[in-house]
Length: 89
Figure 1: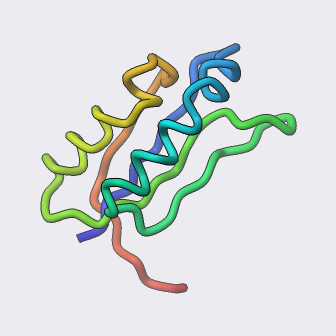
Figure 2: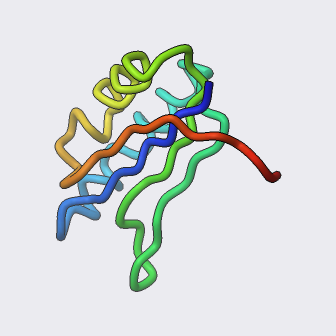
């Protein structure tokens, strides 16, 4: 199943994102469950994330999100995880 992880950064947290980006990308590579991902851009800066996960349950997707280095660093003001259906692309 696919799950959409939608995260919004805390205001003024760009440096937290930059400081933890390598660990976040390594986590994505190590876990092997990311179908696609990328940052939201506002005013030319990264200010959130969209990650599409391929996992067996909502609980597993939430656990992945909790263990993301960005989440552990306190980057996010808001996180949503929900099942997602791929239709096009």
